[in-house]
Image 1 (cartoon, rainbow, N blue to C red):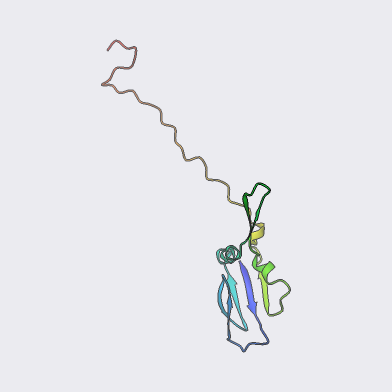
Image 2: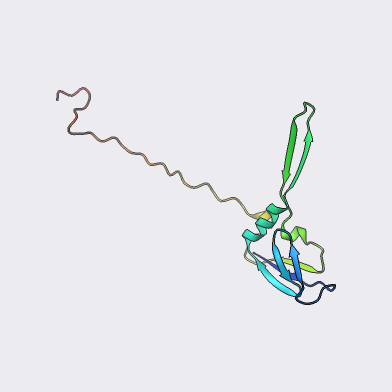
Length: 120
């Protein structure tokens, strides 16, 4: 989770500040931003570049958008901090894959039908 504070000296207290991909906030206020909302912000700002290779094929490269810490780094009017005890998205490790959900079922003998090779 992140903590974000807006403190613009050019806007009055309570003025609305829109952060594309994150929402509308009020100046001179502080907010907690969930990891999910921070990741949605990052996805909103994904960068794509395209170029053609020597064979004429279009190559598209996608770079992840900035984290909140990166996007507002060095700004005096917006301060973003990572809440202690939480891992910022750029350091999050992917969850392990779920365990194998397959189940082994042993065939059962049907008493009404003789097994192969029996005398019944």
